[in-house]
Structure formats: C-alpha cells, structure tokens
Image 1 (tube, rainbow, N blue to C red):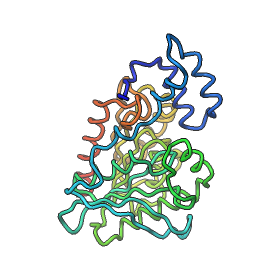
Image 2: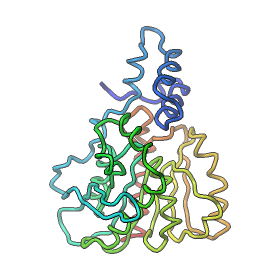
Image 3: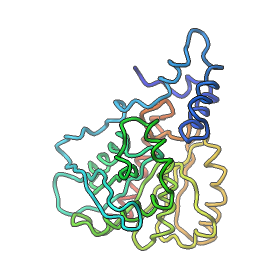
Amino acid sequence: MQRKDAKQFDQKVLDLYDDYAHGRLNRREYVSRLAAFAVGGLTVEALMANLSPNYAWAQQVKPDDARIKTETATYASPQGAGEMKGLLARPAQGTKFPAVLVIHENRGLNPYIEDVARRLAIDGFLAFAPDALTPLGGYPGNDDEGRAMQAKRDRDEMTQDFIAAAKFLDTHERSTGKVGTVGFCFGGGMVNQLAVQIPDVIDAAVPFYGSQPDASDVSKIDAPLLIHNAELDRRILAGAPAFEQALKENNKPFEAFVYPGVNHGFHNDTTPRYDKDAAALAWQRTIAFFKKNLV
C-alpha cells in the first residue's frame, strides 16, 4: 500500500483520526463517524487502513546501518517506574557525543521513534529513546494497544521516567554532558515540561506540536527552544500565543515556526498526515539547532 497524501482526504476525516489517535474518540465512535465518508465504493475498513500508521514507510535508517551502533539500554528511574529501557543509538566512530533525548508520542516506543533516534545518530549525536511502556512490558507492536497501555500510566510517574532518562544521558560515558531533547505530540509536551523541571540538565529543547507549560512556569526555563507547530492543528495552536508571549516577557531565547497547510503529526512519515517538505524543513532546522547549542 502506498502512503496517500493528506490532500486526498476531507480535512474532517483527518481531524477524526487525530481525535481517535489522542483518545478523544473511542474506536466505536471513530468507526461510526468515518462511515459518513465511506462513499463511492470505499469501505470504512479501507478508509481506516489508509489512515493508520504503516511503519515500513518510516525506516530511513536501517537498524544495522554500518554508520551507527544501537543497543537496548536500561536506566534507573527511582522516582518513576523503577527500571526503564530504551533504544540508545550513536555514531559508529568516535568516543563522546552531544546527547539528545527522543520522546515518543502517546503510544510507546514505536518504529518511527526508533528511526528518529537512528537519524540523530547519523548526524553525530548520542540519541536515547526511552519506552514509557517498559513497566507494562514495552511497546506491544501496534499503536492501538500501545495507546491504551500508555493511558494506564500515571502522567507524573512518566514525567519522572523521562527526567531520569535525561539525567542518564547527561552522565553517560559517551556523552559530552550537553543534552538536548526532541519530542512529538505527547513527547512535545514532555519536552516543554523537562525544560521547566530540569533546566540544569536540558541545554536545548525542540517540541513538535506539544502542549505548552503553564505561563507561570516559563521563568524556570533556561534552554533555548525551537518550536514546531502545524497550521491545521487548532488544539495546539490555541495555546501557542500565550506561551510565546510568556517566553518573550521572560527574555527566553526561542524560535517558533508554524508550517502552513499541514496537520498535527506532519513529521511522522507513517500516516497521510505526513508532509514531506514540512518534515524535511523542520528536521533540517532541528539538526542545525542542536549543532548550534550542543556541539
């Protein structure tokens, strides 16, 4: 199956998928509402298949790419779930590297996020992508189950798990001690929280379409931010002006980009919401930002 373009769908269909992916619709409601768009011989099942992630599309860097080394790493999260695991990726050549914590969406460490970690390793970073589903057995192999599993976890406990992951990178033997973080959707919101809660660890932060912290917490941020949002993502954009105003009022360094005509999730190359041009530009800016602030 070839990935379809977002422009091939009614925007209301993409909005329904967004509501389903973020738990605002259960599966029954999602199927029921999609039925209104299953016309002209297109079944609901086919429509769902076209909207759902296909992880074969996300592999830009193969796990056995000779340019990098990868391993499953375990770290302690004493104030979180205890023992956590994730994918650690680094360049094959060299001894120490600036580090980047990669924070997944609301469904665990899926193949797309693993590939993002490998992409960072290709560009010279020690990248670590923890799996918040570790205490529940890890990412189950599909997003629907992963989403249901992550919803069972306590948000504050997960925050502690990612705080512990950032500290793990900060002191890792292959880390230079410079730590950035990038995250997507849930992960984008978590990036903002880490910038607030551990300013002594985070040296650069890149939230992709993530929920914003409270304006009263913005003064705690020390790291420069690079904020990526989508023009059609009304939910996240609703909080953007207040966040950016608070950053300005507190003299915090940041850049914010809104990518025109694209949807929430435009960087995720496994669904039709993916926008190749916007994703490439956002990633180019992200790598340049990390090299500027971490190298």
